[in-house]
Length: 359
Image (tube, rainbow, N blue to C red):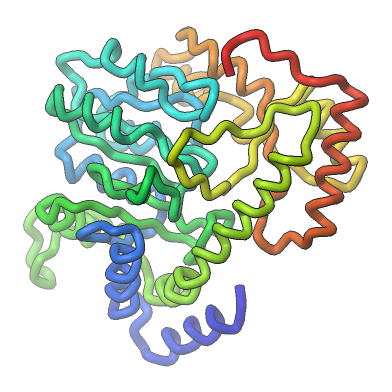
């Protein structure tokens, strides 16, 4: 956060327009232009963006949405909110994203959409997923909560079907709390705008049962200051990641598919004795985090719904190995060097990760 964000918030507060107003519209237009989407609809969070996108496609009770268990729980929760059920498929061991080879086998007569997760800042294989979806008449909702500015070739995340983004404080850009839906489909954009604000087209005239999922002008003011900084933030993350790629030893560094722009919301390595590895890094003054320690299908709410016994071997294996190390753009070169030194020393002590399968 800098002076631009502070000044933007003060201007919004001074204007008297605090709820969804002109700054929200300005952020929607700016974000759509940045992503290269025809429309953008701001929401109160990344989770409400997912929820609205599914509702916009008519997803409801009795339907199924294909997604992955290796993600934050909001991805699958948003499906439950509509009354539908998640149908999980495993991830690709190389890039942590949906294994496209498993998608078609998961399609049933109840399947209505595919929700890939562009995890850690690398887009899922959206071309392959979209091709499958089009062949089967399914909607695509990309959970791009961690992929602001990520791209496949020249095409950015959020431009296939519906894209959904989170602006939570830890993301590559923030509004404090907030989200965004992006799409080329004008009719979808209109439906989610209607649902976002109590189903109103005309004030106090309600067309459908809707929700209060609006973004405030205060949040949008922060986003308007953050968005111009996002390319530089992402480039700094990529520069840090490039040093890690070159200098880390004894750990498995992230795989990036050819032609993909990874924006490194997280720089996630795979290590031996992960929990001991993390504790040893902490002793050496380096923080780390596990995204995510328990796969979604084994979380208590999903066990209560009858999930939990399914076999997703790649998810299970990676859940026990992944560790995210600092990649924030504010890191100095000295701090990056300290991280590299701590990781390499720990890898020597604990031994290298032994990879027994492709990856």
